[in-house]
Length: 231
Image (cartoon, rainbow, N blue to C red):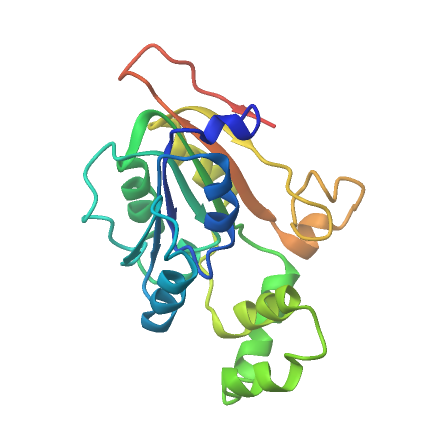
């Protein structure tokens, strides 16, 4: 996006912000306002305490499944990082709702789980196998012997269902709304993308489409902008 100065003076929505990792980073880049949206009662209390001294951060209780509390064209930046695929609502409807609240000329970052691959089938098996194990037991058992981020990933896969999305289908959703669709390669050791695993001949069998990570630039006018996908 051109560096940290891009966020200066911007209004940002982190939809499904979780513990606020991205909010914590972005608030150091001089934004005008960050809305940290999540639905957990305890989480909202934690976020309010964490950001109580920062008047640029507004913590709001709500769900990524319904952004009707926000007007059209409300935000310069919208973030949806690995969130909407955990719901049972229609993915395309939620995606369009996030695009609705983005201003013309704004940018959305989104990450979704792609379709197919052995990895998701293995996690599905594990969820069925351990479905009677409370999450608290997992956290108490492994909380002190592995990285918190690694534990979060395991708990996320074990206790969260996934809606899978085919990459070509997702990109077709984008073309009616966004004039530029840019694939984000991701971070080695963290993300599962074709760019990172380009030397793996078994990538598709293992991971299907991989993670769908994109920057999406909203059309500034109703016509006159080219469509396309870049990497």
